[in-house]
Image (cartoon, rainbow, N blue to C red; front, side, top):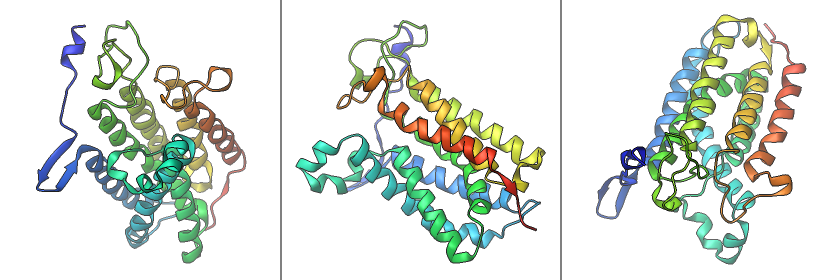
Length: 265
């Protein structure tokens, strides 16, 4: 319980001026998108297939729309459909929380397909670079989840277990930090090594496949420590919705890795 007293009970609102409020969660999205954009500009400028900065400047707006719209729609469909069906107007109240990474991923993929087609660019030439930057946003997002005391882990007696305000009096796994470490730091370093020090960027689809497989495996593993969403609980064979949504990512990632093709000159 010593560690429970150290949990940072920070106000989810960073700054408020009248009705206008800046929340830590929103700041995490902004930091993730801006840092990811800068990283894409740098990585995309490297051989064997350099892409101009203007390409990523233009795609940033598409990425923002894909993340927000896809993340919100995904949460409504996958996690809390009954509540939003009863009160449809709540769908638009994004400031109250409720975003799905898997939905945001679908939104960004659709944005990349449309953007690449409009520029006459091979899809994976863009997607492979975006995949390498995505763990940056995941890292900031999971830290925001931790700060908000949401998406916490299951009850545990490990020495580093914490008591979360929304999780009752029992110490729990800080699963948000597990996800920040695996989906954020570890996956980022793996993709950076492959993109910078191996010929991976020269094979279209390879880095995207590594990201999908790496994220799917990381999320599937952490779900064993994360408390299931209360409105869903455990599903078939004691799995969670996060695990079921991660399985297709793993399969698709392995297919991308297997079918990776040399990039055109």
